[in-house]
Length: 274
Figure 1 (cartoon, rainbow, N blue to C red):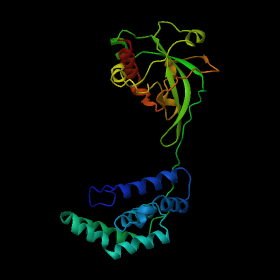
Figure 2 (figure 1 turned 60 degrees about the horizontal axis):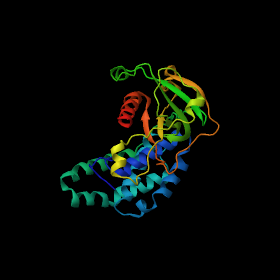
Figure 3 (figure 1 turned 180 degrees about the vertical axis):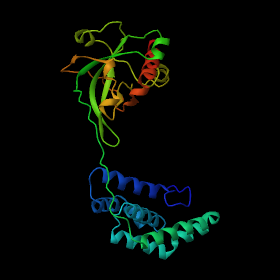
Figure 4 (figure 1 turned 30 degrees about the vertical axis):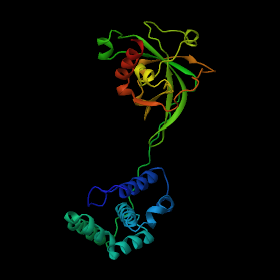
């Protein structure tokens, strides 16, 4: 695992422990359950004499800051602080930073021996789920400056939702195909049924150089709340009960935020229509 400095959270292990503990608290789990999960997920780390101190120091420090320090966790962290192998390792491998590491560990020892703060309230995640159904077809009206510069301001693009994906920390976002068509006026659902889809992200040159490469058509539209969706630009066309899928496609969608969407999609259409 990577270590890039003597501070407590300047290592992959320590960062992962802190981030996982905080993330799971925000998902509504209890501190004790999270501790057991972390131990189960990091068995090899805990058994490694070099990595184990990093794990217990980070877990104890994180829990103390949140007013949730468990006796067993404190006991393990204090054991490794007194054992001294972590500091010895720094003295051998990075003597220039050994004194800084010694100070960090001494501060942690004093911290863990002091009274922890009262348990802090953790604000749970507000997870969003896009309400669109599989088969929903929408038109998107282009109205950016880039669309104006490209000569397609006010024209429409079309997409159909074909799947869903999870976007951290748990938002449910739509995965769509875009139809390979731009129109001045809205097109009917019936006409769109047989319109081909446009590939995403990779340019035609990539597939010419790699003829066996599966084409990517799926686009993941990122939305973390209803406010992030440009509702005024979208027009519901209808729902297709049977969505035509691509055979042998790349099933790893390209993700794009709505704020970056127009520039991206205009360039993508340009690449595939030249």
